[in-house]
Image (tube, rainbow, N blue to C red; front, side, top):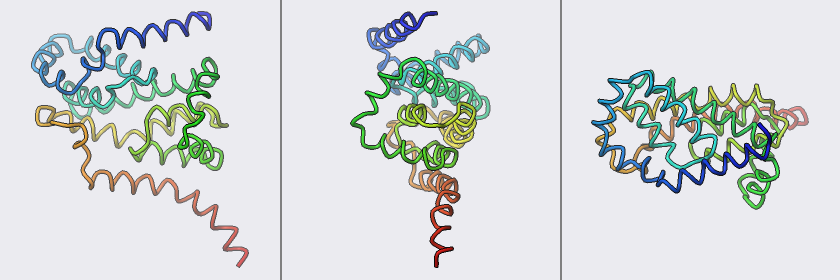
Length: 227
């Protein structure tokens, strides 16, 4: 497939998502309203739904479409915490890898323009240059950074695809489990803003902090020797 053909296909997919009211379809209220029908359909067509939900999640991640959080909850609701976690992990990693590949090899000019003028993106790029593995793990573990930005920024550094995939898979594991677990109580969730308690955010922040210990030790080491 030629480059321009693929670009047009991606653009049409994004346009179709909004044209057919995708944000409303993948809204929390809509999912909750149709949860019984979705559960019944999944029971009758389990494998087909597993594949369809995985593809939808990967595509949503790859195109940075809204609704990723609701999809995570839905997978936990339909498939349970363990299968849901595994599906989120695989689908999100594949989608994030597609973003990386598209930004580095196909849509480099567009991606650079999107990052330019974004103050946070410049800080991310600087961090990746210093210690890519631990920095990327930190950004994946702590859910305080835009997922699309963390997917996009590494493409313009020296981070290898292998490092990107491994750190993405490991880094999103805790959050994937949390969302899949929360999805089992989908009917009791009123607002997405209320999903994370301060205890959960603190736990994820501590995990992220552990990944930065090697970075901090490198910074402190010259000073210690110089004393």
